[in-house]
Length: 160
Image 1: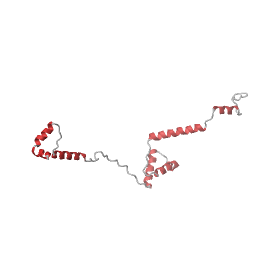
Image 2 (image 1 turned 180 degrees about the vertical axis):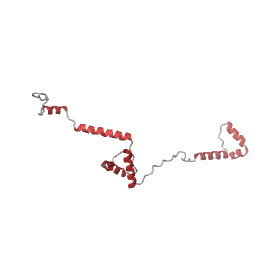
Image 3 (image 1 turned 45 degrees about the vertical axis):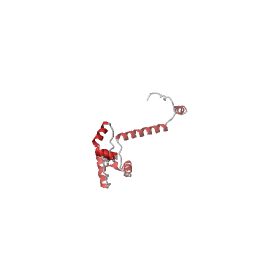
Image 4 (image 1 turned 120 degrees about the horizontal axis):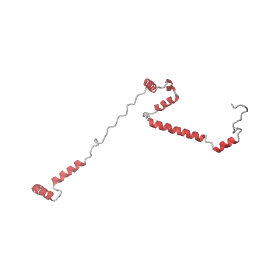
């Protein structure tokens, strides 16, 4: 064919003409080279450069009575707690709840605990206010019709 003839006998002149006219060479070897380069760039790349190693989770300690006793004693010493703190029902309930966890226990930070305690306090004060909510009118009525004297009693003789 004509392309093979051009490649075999007029290769230099054809390439020179292609460069001057900004033309893409259609000679068989040039086409094969472009196709091979395109296939090489279209191969799927690996993800190795984008992967990050996952930090290992802290090892889960196996439970033993001796280990628990040691940790409890250290906790008593470090927090200056009395020994009877371990027999407190709330403490035992906290340990039972933590023991029921299969994936470990996430201990909340100080800020979270503080906000939760403040919220609980405000809620209990609000409930107490609603429970003790008495209107002024009912208080006035109570004092008007009760047997309580509204004036201070007069003392005969000397004042106390």
